[in-house]
Length: 293
Picture 1 (cartoon, rainbow, N blue to C red):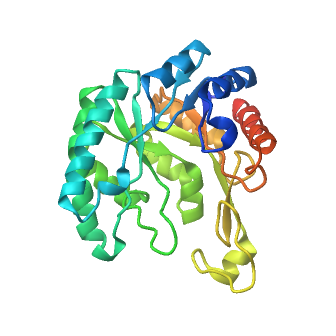
Picture 2 (cartoon, helix red, strand yellow):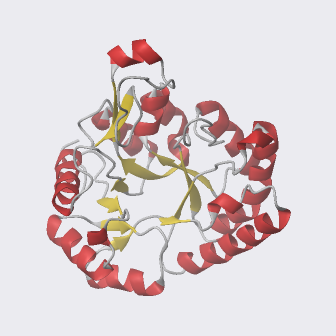
């Protein structure tokens, strides 16, 4: 099934739940539920054949050993770069076009400038391999974990710099409005600026708690209140439609920009995650909502 605006195919990102480990069973459920594709994460030829046999297509695939790409150890970085160049070529032959990744420092104590230099050096050959195969990396805007928030490419300034230093061919974004919402960045304005670089979209939302935002600001922790699952104290990730993302506007901008990729639900919501029934219900709810947007 597809979105109303733009007719973008809707699938989901395969998380690590027990019920999703058997790809044949997962593909059969996805097809019966009305999904078009699955983001497999690490993909093999056998996995892709299983999707095809079920009438599904391949969504994004994840780059491998991304934590080593910014390692202070030169040997580890070199090995990780070579492994990813080979993996891009291998999975591109299976139909992969969007290569999901985060640009996260493995040692935040080295500082942003030093880590950014490593990121440009390591991702250069990978970006070139993507461009050579007609694809692009799809950079995820997850800011990173508390307390360092060490993703070097998730805000307008840092995305702009990364595209300038590595692009434009082979450099792309995984647009996920939930991360921008939790950061306080206007997710629609961001999309208007960077729509030409969007190579994959995550159907995920976020809501902020204005009262606790007053109490704590964006990043401080409470000494009294428990934090959210899939969130912190003042914000949490949600299924599409339960947060603040303006989906009809998002899809309209993507359509006007000529986006020809996919929309994949990334289920991270404390109201649904944690059981087979809950996760299947969360995915089905998200599909129904996005179909009408």
